[in-house]
Length: 250
Image (cartoon, rainbow, N blue to C red; front, side):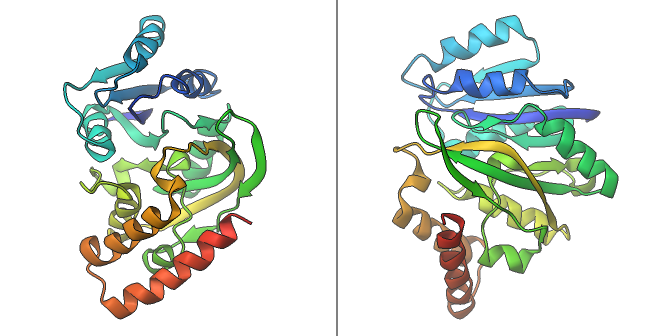
């Protein structure tokens, strides 16, 4: 584990349209001590060729092409297994970072000795135009608070694994990021939010979260199958989740 190094976890599947923009947003970071670990989940387009062009130019970009499709959770875990940094950050292959993202967020973490942080982010259309919607996060979330307000954007998270110890994504089809945040919180860590807008989330028509009903079912599955909440407490948390999900989009 290399102190000061940020290992950026990026799964890729048929991401050729957007992944170059995502990689460029990492290359433009004002904080330069990072490695970008891209795991291609057996893409059918030319994603691998796009990533290789970047990897040939900058040795901090490392490509791990898989021979069969395993899903985003396992792909992220492959990247985590190869990560050498003290800090783990997440960026999907269709999202972007502001250029000062790592610099500002790491300074925030070091100032207060926070192990788990996230931030505000903006929403953009599929072609990259900003919608004007900014997802504003609370200053902190505990385990039980997060169950009712799943507002943490994966693209904004940085975790100090020197404090949290090692971790892996729970192997569920989707909402595995939610399950991981809950796992970290159950180890005794709060998640602390920054009011700075540090990233951009792309609305892609084929994404799971674009299908609201499926996303809601996935959240319920985390409550019942991963967290083993009672039906009554799960229902209570789900009501909070639904209200906050609507509020997030206003």
